Image (cartoon, rainbow, N blue to C red; front, side):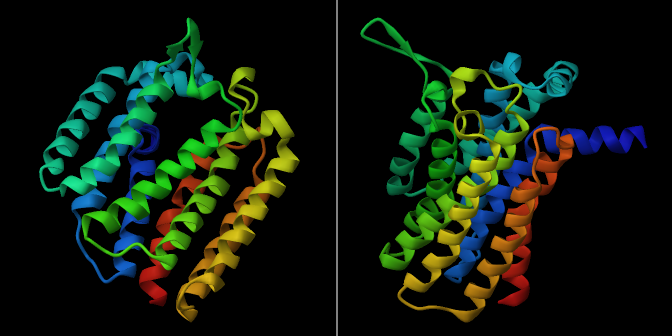
Amino acid sequence: MPLLKRVFDFYIFSNIHVALAVFCLVKITLLSYGNSSYIIPLFCLFSTIASYNLIRIFRIEEVQPWFYEFIKNNKLILILFTVFSAVVAFLLIFKFRYATLFWFIPFGIITLFYVNPFHLKKQKISLRYIAFVKLFLIAISWAAVTVIIPLVQHQIHIGNTEIILFVQRFLFVAAITIPFDIRDVTYDKEELKTLPQTIGIQKSKWLGILFLMLFLGLEFFKTTVVPEQLRIHFYIAVVTLLFLVKSTEDQNKYYSAFFVESLPMVWLGLFIWLR
């Protein structure tokens, strides 16, 4: 049993689980257009593992105590796994169109400045310490990487429906990020100015509910309203709502890291089953 728990913990806290969540969101986008390619999904999987682990390793002093212990006890294997993931992601880049590579540049820069502060007029500035920027950067990065980049790579026209899809993805990711911020509210530095730190836990939940209502409502503004798609979005919005409402600052360490992060897998499962 301890061995299984160690394997499970490594799966979650080495960011394999979150990377699979990104993988699933990319697959949802591609399958919506009848495309079964795995190049972009696999790239997103391995690049997510590499980038998230780098952030955790370099910002180890900012994580919760139990997470600190996990990183400290597994630092060597985490570094090796991160290097392996980065190499695989790099090799997959050679299969990209130039236009796709262009779209990746701003998100590489965002990751760089999110981890490392920069100096402007002799003043030290960090993206991490601008109010609400953490949630915004995560949501817009995930939305672009899981919607815009797959469409660009496969030369799918970006029109009204695709823009709405991008906004929906932004709102969904913003909503599932809130339980993580609620979990970390006690441990996050005050300078981070996350939603729960700034407006409180209850108001953050209400904002998340608003995000989910908009996520569902935007389905009616697409060029063509597909009943199956509407049903899938309704189900995933309801499940996400339940996890959002039930999230607390003293939640079990697996609540957000495993269950909330599993929502994209649930979404892909619903998509395959109901479509």
